[in-house]
Length: 241
Ligand code: BG6
Ligand code: MG
Image (tube, rainbow, N blue to C red; front, side, top):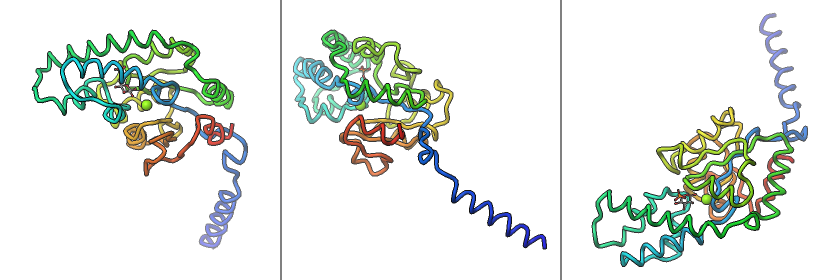
């Protein structure tokens, strides 16, 4: 009798679970939090990084081109310098490397002064507004120590609910630290957040942290990406917004 009752109860439960509408069917947002990489997702700073690293590479006589620059996406400043110095015949001390990175950063920050609200596309701004209206909390998860400067230049200085960037982490992508901190700042669990990335290392970091990843550009080709997207506006469909 007990076994029959149990069987009946679990049958009813199974039927309920099967027929229960998913959050998406009900038109409710899929993710409670969305964490955006900055460079290459919200805006484009690649050309400024390139110009600043190129000036340094030329000064020390090391070959550098745009293909090498592509390898620096999502990688911290010091790790980027190490990649550039792979082609150097000279060994540099830690102090010399820090001086070189500081010099590059000075040039880079000077170039960032050219950025303005015109560098925030209407598509990105409209999509962010729609995602926010869906009820999701929005955060930045960027390896850059210049994230706040860049956000200010493009008019998003006060826009996000949280900013996790190069100033609050010790390990850069593919380590998940920057995204885990962003989720913590939002007060959300990684499984309830989506990470949006353009770099393979960024998707790697998202997956390692227990997040779903939406990949744009090269990141859309990552085998572990949950949502390969073609345009930023595609995020609205993912969220059901
Ligand atoms: C990432 C960029 O967002 O920030 C990398 O994709 C960059 O290219 C890294 O090296 C660190 O940036 P910053 O501004 O701290 O030198
Ligand atoms: Mg990026």
